[in-house]
Every structure is written in C-alpha cells, then in structure tokens.
Image (cartoon, rainbow, N blue to C red):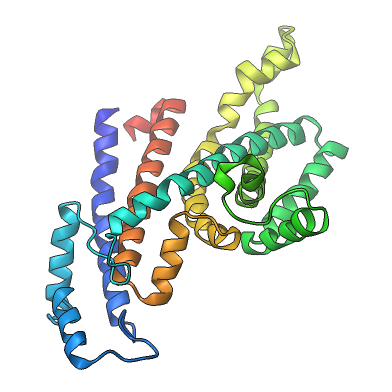
Length: 307
C-alpha cells in the first residue's frame, strides 16, 4: 500500500507544477493590474508598489521568485488587503468553507446512496420514479440557479429559513446553502448507486445468497452494498473538489464569510497573490482528497494496488 501511495504522489507533483505555472502566467499576461482603478495613482507610488511586489522585474524572474516562495510554504502577500497575507485570509475563511462543504459532502453521500438503493429495490415503481424526478432537477439546474429559487420559496414566500448570512453557525442559516451544494452531487451519486446496485442484485453470488435462504436486509447490507459502492467511491474525489470549488459561488450568493468571498473579491480586484494562493490551496486539497479516494478504492478492490 505504501508503494502505491508513493506512486500516486509522484504523479501529482508534475500536475501541481504545471497548474501553478499556467495560473501564474495567465494572470500576469491578462490586461490590467491590481493597482488600476478609477483614479490612477501617482507614478511615484506606482513605482514603489511595483518594486515592493517585484512587479518591476522581468516576468520570468517574478515567476521564479514566486515559485521559490511557494516551495517554502509562503503564498505571498495580498496586493489589496495589506493587513493580511494570503495564508491568513485563507485561514480566516477556511473553517466556514469546511463546515459548509463538509456537511454538504456527507449529506450528498447519505442521501445519494439511500436514494440509489431505494431506486434499485423498487425499480420501475413509484419510489423509483419519484427519486428520478428529484434527481433530474438537481442534474439540470446549476447551483447558482437553484440557490435563488430556494431563497425565494423558503426564505421570502414561506419565511421558514433565512436567505443569507452565517448567524453564528445556526442550523437555520446552513440548511439552504448545504441543500444547494449537496443536491447535484446527491443526484449523481444516486444515479451511480442505482445502476451499480441493480447490476449487483442480478449477480450470481446474490442469487446464491437468496437460494441459501438469507433475508433481503442481510443480503443487501452484507453482500450487495460493498461492491455496489465501487463506482460511488470513484466519484467521491471529483465530488469533493466540485463541492469545494462550487462553494465559492454559493458562499457569495448566501453572504457566507468563507474563502469564496475573498477569492471573488480578489478576482474582481486583480489581486494576483490572493487568486494564486487560493488556486494553489484548492489544488493541494483536491489532490489530497483524490489520494484518499484512491486509497479507499484500493481497500475495496485489492487488485488496484498491484496495477
């Protein structure tokens, strides 16, 4: 297992290097800059700012300086928020993003797996049709469209839930953003689980278990669930990354104090440091989550370790 993990890590290093390089040069080559505004700054101040942030140096030299800082764990300063570094801003917003993304992730798994098993057990019956209809809504509508619809229905018309804000982490403020984030991934997990469960329930070893007189609950819990989860486990890595990156938009819509607020404000203000730092942070996090999924997949299917 250790050799398998080391091989996976070795393949991830070039991916990280390429991603950092591409993001750096795209930001630097785009027109405009972090200090461009409606009121232009005096030339002397612009020169001092450029020298302070190494913007007066050749582009390749800027890249080498930034890459060297990243290798030492320094994500650099924020060009706009001078009182906080990039790492400090990420640390401020990280707990809120993790709470929303983590709860949405586990909600999507629980609801998706349960809906998939229900659809497989009642194939082509009304529970299957009902879950399919709900799933279809989650697959068709993007989260930035589902969010205002739920805000309008449950926040404005019915008045059951607040339409935005953190509210000290109260559950009422978390229901809508978690539902928006989890819906689409619960729908995809449900589709994967339903198809896999139907295939497993028609397998020969399930027929053998039924022939031995085992009850349906025991067959599902002991024999069917584990092999049926294989496609779902493969999807959990991308799902986690989609939830984290999708939370950037959802946090902005619901006014949550997570990393998304800093990232979007930095993107609008052309804050090179904050945008690059957030991209690097999410990239490392996504790679780590995918590695955990690979390990879980290898645990479920030992043949993966030797491939």
